[in-house]
Image (tube, rainbow, N blue to C red; front, top):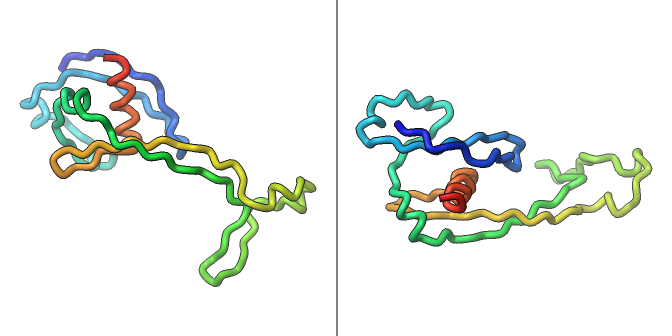
Length: 127
């Protein structure tokens, strides 16, 4: 294995901090690699050229802060007590509406998205 370098640190929307490293790995090496199944769902080999030549599908999601929710019985559950805290009424309803990009690649029946596609796009921007 030949180490190429480290990509940027990524902080996922769920708060996970991800440090990515890039290396050249020979196919035969994968047979002897010790892959932690608790961390890695599966391993697939995709040529880097595929990502260079294929534009990802791009989607934009919206994140809103929800100060309340309805439970299974249909009752309103207050998650953020705006009145008790003496905050303006505007915070009694959803606010924020932050935009979040999602990139999706499709390769031989596999869908590559989420943090994996963010890391791939970071790699492509550097090499």
